[in-house]
Image (tube, rainbow, N blue to C red):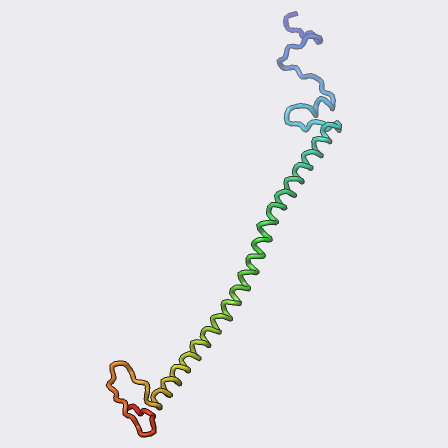
Length: 134
C-alpha cells in the first residue's frame, strides 16, 4: 500500500481542500465580507465628525486673515484716492504760486522797488514823497 492514498490523511502536497463559498471569499486577495458591527459604524461616525470639525476650524482660521485682507485692500484703495486728490490739489497750488510770484514780480517792477540780486539800482526821491527806482 505504498502507492495508495488514505482519504482521511492530508499530506499537504497535491491535494486541494474543498472550499465553501464563504471560505473562498476569505482567501488572500479576496474582499472580506463586511459585517455591520456597531463599533465599526461608530468609528466611521467619529472619523467623519473629526474631519468635519477640522475643516470647520480651518475655515474659521482662514476667515480672519481673509476678512482682514479685504478690509485692508479697501482702506488702501481709499488712501490711494485721497492721495490722488492731494496730488491734484498740490499741482494746482504750485501753479497758483507761480502765477502769484509772477504777478508780484510784475507789480514790484512797475512800482520800482523790486530789483533782481546783484543788480545796481538807485532810488530817487520825488517831490511828493514817493520814491522812484531806476
